[in-house]
Length: 102
Image 1 (tube, helix red, strand yellow):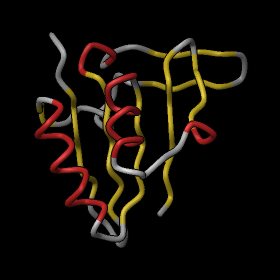
Image 2 (spheres, one colour; image 1 turned 30 degrees about the vertical axis):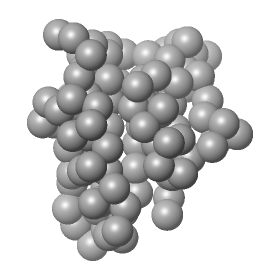
Image 3 (cartoon, one colour; image 1 turned 90 degrees about the vertical axis):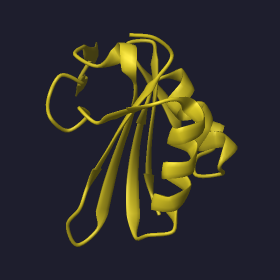
Image 4 (tube, one colour; image 1 turned 120 degrees about the horizontal axis):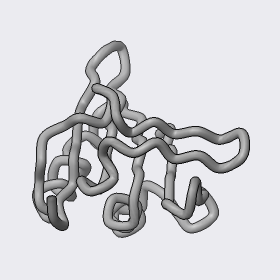
């Protein structure tokens, strides 16, 4: 595993897009009462480099989508695209996480 991103689109009445730094997949992040399980099917998506992920996130942003971003690279892409800002990012077990309901 390297510097790639996992991206999975869950399609229902509204798209839910899970974006995770690849090396974080399989971990369970725990910070007090906050728990984020990255080991399941929700975050097990297609492997993309940062540029590919940015293009796919931009495409999804044109739809009625919500986003879950986990990890430094994934959150940075979200910031660059204007989907999240610094105030919407929290750390869970020292890993940046942002939820965007657009």
